[in-house]
Length: 287
Image (cartoon, rainbow, N blue to C red):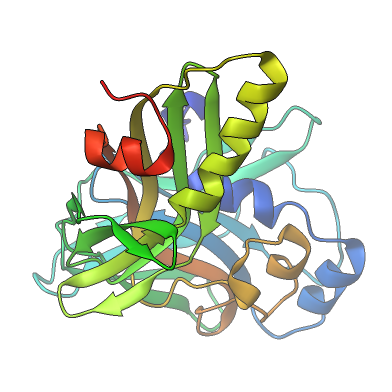
């Protein structure tokens, strides 16, 4: 009997790739179908998770809906730094629209800095494979704020980070909570990656909202930055995760003898309370 894994057990980050990979139009799937490759795969190696998972599509000559039946595929991962190999188990995920997806999984926790290769094979077909390096552990640091020409910025350093995606800054105020997407806006520095928060521009919207709500004393209680630390290769075309672009075969792929993408990464968050000097510079009430 095949092992099944409940949808809530899947690594959270995998859902980004699972959902995006399911959005391709029929023309895109036809392009995949007419190739000689046997598989498409999407997955994330996450050093914070005890279970790893990849979604696997079997490419057939006839384009048919995925069924909740076993597929002729063997999935195996190898830690290229230790040589340890693990065979993954198939499972079936049911989506709200009634469609199914095959998600292969294995119970192990990868180490930071290790290289992993995932191979998907079946008899008579070339082995589809992809390699990724798990990023090192990264810790965020709030650097001194800067004032240039009246504009205030707040740089954040992510130590040893090879790459950042899905960068989001959050402000907690007495006016409400405000989120700003910075996508992949970052700078290369010797210590890692630096993200410069355009804090003056961001807070203008907060003050406009305060005026609209009749709030005179605006309080900036705290802030946080949420990122996904990834391997160096994980930068989507145009810097934005567009499902329609992402689903086109070969547009964003690192799979040999196949389609799709295998990356590695993990979510990270940095929380802090701005200094009173910064609050005063921006026009917030000191605390």
